Image 1 (tube, rainbow, N blue to C red):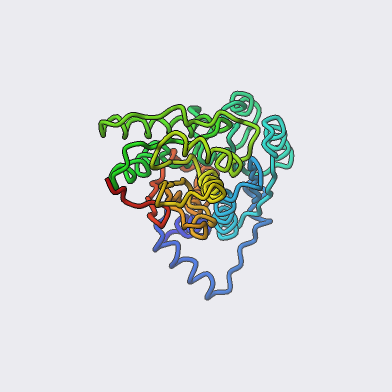
Image 2: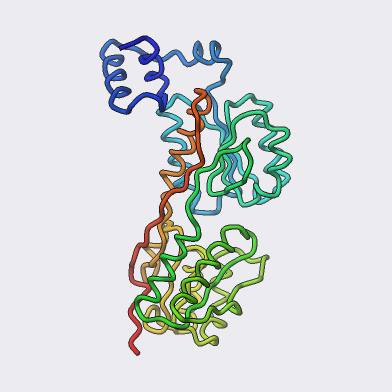
Length: 320
């Protein structure tokens, strides 16, 4: 085995097969080899540090993503600096600039605002940037995301398959890109099935948090006459179920509910929530791996990961 192959394997290069990397690391550990990250950082002009900025920490979706980032960063010899933008696009941009001043090797961004600041960021941020669940068409960034459209199709098709014809969509407006894709999938599945979308159920209130949006929607959902509701995310769905309980409306007997994300709360909701599972841990892992590949001057393409439908107790076949 050549010296360059061993060197790449010890740097966890994606150019080396996993089997070869494992073999090299096994021998290295038997010989008592411990990577000198300080020496590596000096020779490569790196800090072996990754900066990650998230929109806010209250979103349960993000914590499994962070877990994937942390695990893989540790495995590849990186330290992680985590910062919260508190849903403020200017703060988000300032955090990215701060990371650059600290000379981190790259930045991972999980944000709903990136599309509004990316033109400034791509002009001023001179290091690799990996976006999670945000696709921006620019060569300066790479992204790992899910297919919002196909994920939403899974949810709505499930409701159609179990006999529902009047299906509402409950969304929010502070995440317009993903919400529009999910709404388009909702409309397409219904039209393809000979059914009519119900845009009047789209929530336009932007001052409420996700759970509050669902909770506040319960009464209007029942007044609309729908038999099922597809919610933009699990927090809205859990809020809707809470609002329906307050009204004495049984789920799924009177209304079937589907969410999106499969956060931890989904399986413990009452009833347990049918939802679309995002590969959150895998997204975090791939973000770090992609960043490491870019730093190793390897070609990296954007990645779109698959979702899966998880059927639990909040949906049931409609009896006509």
